[in-house]
Image (cartoon, rainbow, N blue to C red; front, side, top):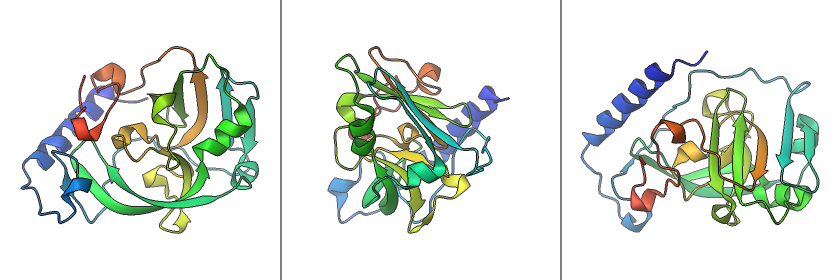
Amino acid sequence: MINTGKMIRAKSAFLEKFKKLAPRVDPNHARLPPGQHLTQGFPVLDLGIRPKFDPATWRFRVGGEVEQPINLSWADFTALPKAEQVCDFHCVTTWSKYDVRWGGVKFSTIVERAHPKDSARHLIMDCGDGYTTNLPLSELTGDDIMLAYELEGAPLPLDHGGPLRMIVPHIYAWKSAKFLIGLRFLSNDEKGYWEVRGYHNHADPWREERFG
């Protein structure tokens, strides 16, 4: 069972810690959103539940307002056309990491197979730890939106959301959901785990949309 109060306190403490850091000089400052600090590491934040991955039983499902619902095994999913990309990663707790290399399946590939209906306007990401988060489909049209199962050329480790996570580089990373097991296309918005607890519903790092 998720201890929500403990998680909120932990994330708040993490945020306060990073607020105290002096901003580092960034020669490519246009890449660094306001209020962010560069890190060479890759901090880990989650709900404290990391579901075990069994490739024999794992399933990925896409439903809701779609013409073709999807239900894939791990072998089926990894047989989809693979892509690689390098992008920056911005966490709401004020750290950013440049040039992270991901491998996986482009979101557009899923869209092509599921055929969302004209009524679909929003996406809900469902995760194996009970986490959910939301975005309007209008934010997911870029070619860099990915369902990643590799990090820096290796299988995505459990602490970074393995075996599969969403990558939405231009939005704060709590929207890049870890332990991804499904997508729901909806006509109406549905706030996710952190959004109902006061986080911003949109989460643009360039506007510092941290809290609602």
